[in-house]
Each structure stands twice: as C-alpha cells, then as structure tokens.
Length: 146
Image (cartoon, rainbow, N blue to C red; front, top):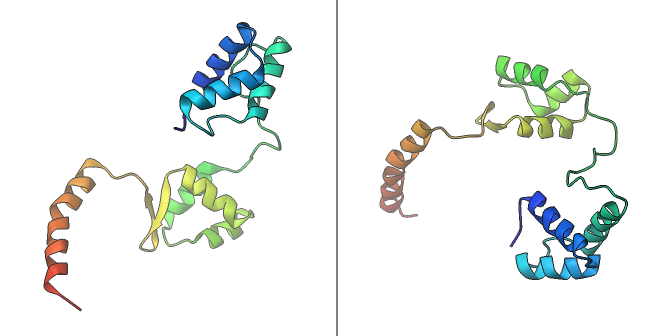
C-alpha cells in the first residue's frame, strides 16, 4: 500500500523518535504497517537525523537547483490564442527545451487532443455525453465483423 500523505508517515516517525526507537526499527514498523516500499531506510535515517539535530519541522526542505523562471501564464495565453501550436514550436518561441513546455502544460492541466490543446478534466456534461454515446459505439462494433 502506498501512502500518499507523507505528513502522516513523518508524524509516526517523530513519535517513534520520541519513544527512543532507532531509525531501522521505525523503517521496519512503517513498512510492515503500510506495506513494502512505504519508505526507504535511508529516508527514515535522514528524518531521524533531522529530529536529533532539534529540527522538529515535518515539512520538506526547499528543493535544490535554480528556481524556475518560466512564465506559465504566457504559455497558457499562447496556447489559448493558437491551439495549433506544437510543443516544439512553443519551445522555440519561449527559448526553452521541449520537455520543459510539455511539463508545464501538463502542470497547467492541458493535453493535446485532435490538433488542439484542451483541459485534461472532463466536466459533468462531457461525462454524460460519453455515457449517452457509448452504447451506440458498442452496437456498431457488434454489427461490423472483419
């Protein structure tokens, strides 16, 4: 079982630390309780080292590397103005790597469908249309045998 709420795991590790447990004991207990792969032993040791150095924060430290200065709003505006733009064209326009454009579009919830950028989410009326139309597709498939 994969635990999505890392804060929950960190609270348990903090409890184990306060009880005098070793990192290895906490690692075994957490993986036994939540399933193999919940946390690595090295991650557990890192958190115990933080607790030992009086760092009681359960939040992640700021990430490494240079912060992104990419303008998501400008990308979103460009995509909405011209839906035919490809990620390669956008990368040239913004002078960045194509993968950077792909990653930012994904974070903005945009996916490419039929030569245009559309929101990735389906709204209630879209879902209802799919439910209404899908039986007709199934019946058409059954009529035409190859």
